[in-house]
Amino acid sequence: MKRLAMIGCERIGSYHLDHLLQMDGRVELAGFCDLVPEKAELFRRRAGSGRAFTDFRQMYDEVRPDMVFICVPPFAHGDIEDETIRRGIHFFVEKPVSLDEAFARRTADRVKKAGLITAVGFQCRYSSLIEPLKAFLAGNEVRLVEASRVNGVPEMPWWPYKNKSGGMLVESAIHQLDLIRWLFDEPAAVCTFGEGGALRRQGYDIDEVTTTIIRFRGGALGVMSAGCYATEGASFDSKITFSAGEKRAVHRIIETLDFHEKDEDAEGGIFVTKGDGVLSKKTKTVTLRQENDAGLDCDRTFVEAVLSGDASAIRCDYADGVKSLIFALACNRSAETGVPVEVAY
Image (cartoon, rainbow, N blue to C red; front, side, top):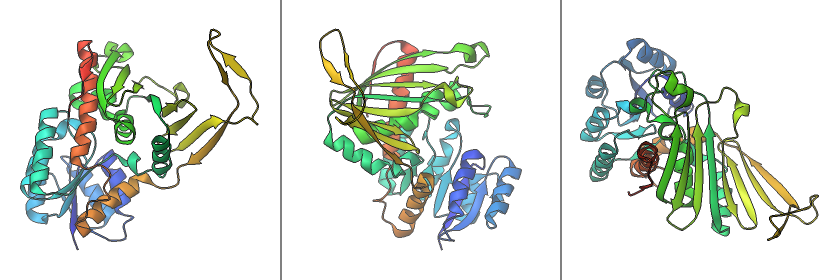
C-alpha cells in the first residue's frame, strides 16, 4: 500500500484529512507534520495511524511517503516543495501555490522534468455544475464576465498581511479567477483599483475591497470585485455571471447554476434604453444545484492518479495552478502601481 503524508495540520489540513478518511483505506496515512507538535499529534489520533513530526525532512526520512499533501499558508512555500521534488514525491498543494511568481515558475519546470504527479486545491473545478456550464460556454458567445467574492477577514493571524497571504485576490478570490480562466478564456491584461478602508486603519496592509477590469485574449471583457469587509452573508452575492446576447449563466460556486433565457410565455414587459432599443423582459430561469462533494472528488482524483500512475483526470496540476497565481498577482501589481498590467505566462 502506498504511503501518504501531510504537512500542515490546521484548518485546510483538517479539510483534506476528512476526505482522506473517506477513501476506505486506499492509502496508508503514514505521517503528519506541523511546527506545533500537538497539532500533528491530533491529526495522527484522528487518522488512527501514522506518526507525528515537527520536521518534514525527518518525516520524509523515516516515513518515505509516496505522496504528500502540502497544506501550509501561502508564505510558507519554498523549502518544502524543493525537498519534495528532490526526493521524487508526488504532491498535492493548496492554493495559492506560492506568493513568489519566480519560485512558482521554477517549481513548475522542476516538476515537469521530474515527471511528478501534482494537483492544486482548486476543488471548485470538480463541481457537478462544471459540465453544464462548459456546455453553455461552448454554445454561446459570451461578451461580458462579471465575478465577485466578498467575505470577512478569516481568523488567521497572518491573513491581513499581504506578504503572508497575498491579500483577498490571491488567497480567496483566486477561486473565481481560476474558474474564469479555466472555463472561459485566459486574461490578456488587468487593471485593478483597491481601497484599504478600515483594515488599513487597524494597521493591516491588504485591500479591504478591489475591483478589477479584465481584457480577455479572445476580446471579451470582465469585472472581478473582491472584498473582505463583510460582517454578514447578506452583504454581497458572490458569483460569476457569463453574459451572452440572448441569455446568461450565473454560477454560485459549489452551490447553484442558473440559466436565464427568453420565454415569451413568461410574465414581464420591456425596457427601453434612451429610445435606442427595446429588450424583452420575458425570461425564464432554470436552476441546477450542486450534487457532489467537490473537495472529496478533488482529493480522491489526486490519490487515484498516484495509485494508478495516470494523471489524466486531474483538473489542475501544478503548472496550471501557477497560471492562476500569475493572474492574481498581476491584479495585485496593478492595484499597487495604478496602471494596467499585462498577464504573461
